[in-house]
Image 1 (cartoon, rainbow, N blue to C red):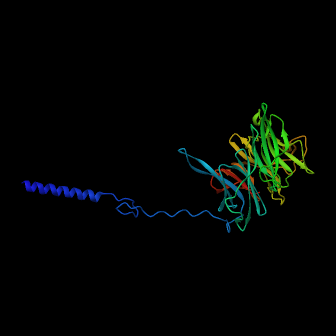
Image 2 (image 1 turned 45 degrees about the horizontal axis):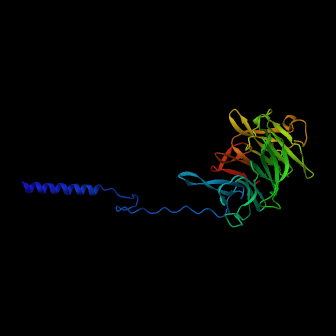
Length: 373
């Protein structure tokens, strides 16, 4: 009996061990061996393109920025910002620069030369480059230059644009003087200076008035401005312009519309864009502004024809009939015109068909974007 019990016990132990061995899970399934060796390493992602030769559409057609995300002090945050240029369809992008932080790009492509200015720190920086055959001639990444850095206390730049010939920067400068914030419109001649430049004062707004976004026409002699009363918010807001005649800028703005006529918004970063558009199909391209409008349903953009808006007038251009509404209800932000359409941030970067107002996404969400026009 003892021998039979011992044999039976041994058989049970062996059977249990065999069952445990058979039940041992494999490691690294999908090609890994039972000994736990890792599977094949996935292939690395393809390298970013070095040129856009052969890409569809027009190249370059727009510039945009995207934050580089990473971990800092245990939190995911933006570590730096990449600057890209892309073709008109968004199918090909080239990274041309990287900064610790940059935003609010403004882009002009004049022939083969491109210039992009952007907010960096408490000032404006710039990159210059040349494009031929779908490629940037200069070595990438480009080395930016600091065009202007604000050093005065309680002062800063809160908006800026390039002239259409890319030779001048128009900048909105503000400084606390006593108890009032004083805004001035300043110009920087980058045809003769590209770093540590000295701005010239073009126009000073008396307190409490300030101005935000700007746009300029194709001949660089009409500068559109959003103006508002700091104390009354947007209740005293106007969309206006300064005219340059015989090389001299006007000292008094002409108002295109005011907030009592239409609910224009003039927060510091409200967006206004200028473009040429044959909206009535008469083979004549008209001067058109994309204007941010506040409505009960939120913020949208409307298009206004301002071709016939005279340099001087007692009434606003809208009330006198010199400006007319072309289209309304365009959802998005930071618009910029291209020869036959409008690009706008609305989720991603969308192209707006100006005839149907239908939007088509060409880029995923970005931080800032501007067309090359």
